[in-house]
Amino acid sequence: MKTYIKFLINGFLKSFLKTFFIMLCLIFILNILKEIEFFTNINVSPIYPLYLSLLSSPSIIFEMFPFIFLISTQFFFIKLFNNNEINIFKYSGLKNLKIISVLCFLTFFIGLLIISFFYNLSSTFQSYYLQIKSQYSTDKLHLAVINKNGLWIKDIINKETNIINSSKIDNNFLTDTFITTFNEDFDLIKSLKSDKIDIKKNQWLIYDAIIFENNTTQKKKLIKFESNFNQKRIESLFSNLSSLSFLRLIDLRKNYKLLNYSTVDIDIEIYKIASYPLMLVLMTVLSSAIMFNTKNYSNTSFKIIIGLFFSVIIYYMNNFFNVLGSTEKIPLMISVWTPMIFLTLITLTMLVKINDK
Image (cartoon, rainbow, N blue to C red):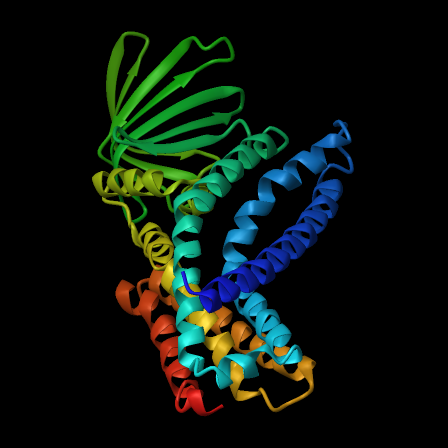
């Protein structure tokens, strides 16, 4: 490996690791304060806020990696400029684009490590975090899961436990549904079957129900059924996709398909993870281009502010198109790739005549 490549890799890695650990510590401290507030009126060990903050911080860091790469790249070039090392490269015939290309390959490699190892680690930690927090939630008695056998709900109303299984969700309707009701001692009270249940509100409307109770069978055209769940709540229960590994996301998508349930949010998450290394590369190139184009400005704060300005624009643009995609206002691929294309165009514009800078 050539000497200049080793120098660039070592310098960039040092800048990246410093920025990473500073952000990790900052997020960790903020999370501790949030958890302390959550447990204010709950009698738990003082170590709980510390432990939960440790579990939740990696998933937040994962979302911040584009920002971390942008800032660490800026710090890397600030050091090169201040020590006049960039001029040594220039006089030795090393083009600016060559420097940027080395950083791009390194960023892409780090990005692959992030989605292969760090993401799975953060999702596992986030899953443990949600499990622990749910123990202190008022919703812990009401559970819902989706698997290959359909939607399963455990719902407790007036000391009676309802176990609900539906093979398919169609908009705000459950189809092919069985509801089994138990008392406090978990003795069977009754069971019910229906092919159409309106779950738009907490008072479900069960159509053409077949009821099995006390060894008898009866049919009813319409039954009103109280529940802690409605359509929006069921959807929200599966919105925390950051607690699922990449393989579990794919498995969940298959189960959603079996239920005829929208997979848009899962698809967006999968595409986001798959394209993450490319996003990180674009942020590194953008930051490099900013630094070369503002090289003659002695005000370091000005350079950092420009980087922050672009990162904020990209962040809100990403969120905006994600919302449009998840609500199916625009096609999924457009919602995922438009911010990337926008970032690419900005970067290419700033790279014009970059070797002359």
